[in-house]
Length: 201
Ligand code: HEM
Image 1 (cartoon, rainbow, N blue to C red):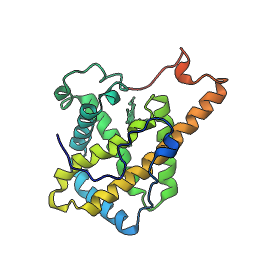
Image 2: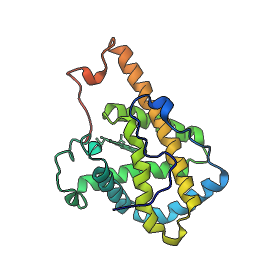
Image 3: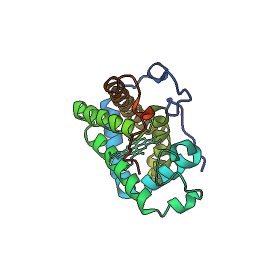
């Protein structure tokens, strides 16, 4: 289960004051964009597998994330999830989002729109920003063995930068949704209101 990963702050420890505690996302260079797009061609062949590995690892290392998913929160034996149709479907949704990000690296305004909206939906799912950094780290651990000797420290840095960039925008979307929610509810956050329904799995 172990996975060596160099630190770019993908797994932030801080929960409060995230807006200021986050490492700044670096702008991806054209070389990094090429590297990511090239490696994606290999990863793409195993997306269902990567999606499952990534989420099983996430739930193993950070069980508090599992609690956010209605369908998975009561699953004790994580090995069972490796064959779960629901986790496979969810993993594929997340991987297709990553695929869209990779395809839009040359159209950052479109990528930003996509990530902002995803951050907003994560507010509705009750999935707070303090957990987002974990996903990039688990993605990297899941794809490293697939890329074998093609994996380099530069490629790792490029993927880390992409996740930092995307999750930074997701956090903004989450916060915007939270602020709107707060102002339309006259001061009580949606989470505090009893009629809250969630579309989460
Ligand atoms: C890089 C970070 C993440 C990305 C790119 C991501 C991506 C996605 C995508 C693409 C979806 C499906 C969107 C949709 O159908 O509306 C989704 C749904 C969801 N995500 Fe995330 N996610 C991230 C982090 C997290 C984390 C850390 C959690 C929990 C702690 C989480 C919880 C959820 C939940 C509960 C759903 C709803 C599942 C459903 O009802 O189908 N996400 N996520």
